[in-house]
Image (cartoon, rainbow, N blue to C red; front, side, top):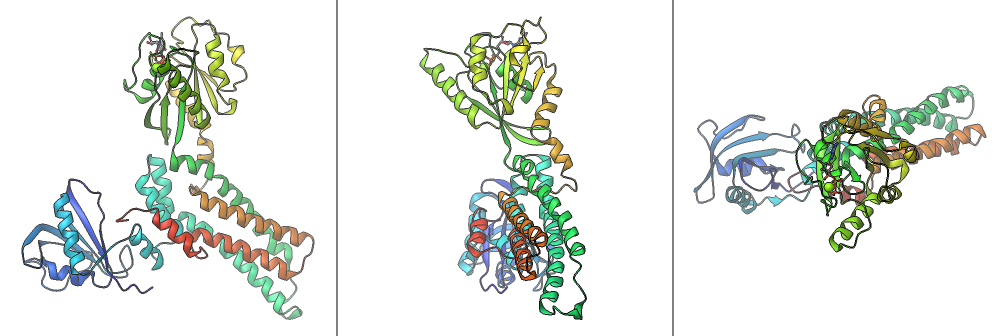
Length: 456
Ligand SMILES: Nc1nc2c(ncn2[C@@H]2O[C@H](COP(=O)(O)OP(=O)(O)OP(=O)(O)O)[C@@H](O)[C@H]2O)c(=O)[nH]1
Ligand SMILES: [Mg+2]
């Protein structure tokens, strides 16, 4: 791809920092640098991928900052073009003047995601790798970061290319028989052609299903702590966080608003929400709190329904139980450091129950394990080669490809003409190409890159 303009943008976030980096990419990047940089160690030619120390000067030869600069020459750079990075001091004013220096010299401010878009257009990254750049940056847990990094390194793409290759060779064979139906190319051994594609289709289904885990890793999940007043919800929140975040008192109705905190649980990024105790009340503030708790019960991915094991279930507990969708609820029987008076049979509609003491921190590891299990840790491990689909777009493309392959299998079974079989394979290939970007329409590409922010 030929790009004529040179773009510039800060690649470190705004604010104060030890170092701030401004990146230039394009045919004039090195020329702009030469006009603005003075150093004892470099005269005219910058060696690629080497750091140089010197002074950055504006057009009036006024010193802007003491900097380190690096030139990465095409094609061995992030964008595939000549790239220059200026490492200046990370102050708002300095970054601004470095940026202005190059804008005045003729560079254009990069659009959001434009560096990565150029990397994609120049074939440095395919689309699924480019999409992973944002995920790596935004990852909120180690596992999420690893999955994103795998995708950036091309694990998903390689899998998709291997699927495409298989379909392409089958298609080539089919087309040979369509073009030369007579004996010239021998007779077509259909089972030999179809069986490996069947195996592949099964693998593609598993890969599409890994999105259940992928979504959780990428977006995180919300876990709501729900129950009647005083059962120890805030105590449980604090125990999970390992800090006294929420106020805990013996007074029923202590928590009146919802309280959200982030944590990492068994590798999953989690937003945990403590809510007001559920009960009928005339207090307008508490009433609003109860209303908020109820609405969170609908939107949460998982509910920890807390009950007090040291007392029998009450009507207020039943009110809380009614708000819980059975299949996304774990019953946490709290206060197991005290004599247990609760009748667990009354909770039997919930299939996951665990006994803990939030105050004494008993049973917390088992609770974490159970939560991880419910969030799909098994699936995560079972995702085999560690390839996890994290983008809905990828899942949808895989599912569409599978639909085409199923049509192909059906066609084989009913002995449809080879032309139709070839069409199904071509459609499958087209869907797979949407993941890697080979067949992705321009509007979708623009949409994807516009989700990035400036400097990416
Ligand atoms: N013995 C015992 N007491 C506990 C335990 N967990 C919480 N408590 C006590 O129960 C009382 C209520 O605890 P909170 O955590 O404030 O309960 P809550 O469900 O958030 O209450 P509201 O915010 O009023 O709805 C406090 O006195 C806690 O010390 C436990 O595991 N064992
Ligand atoms: Mg509370």
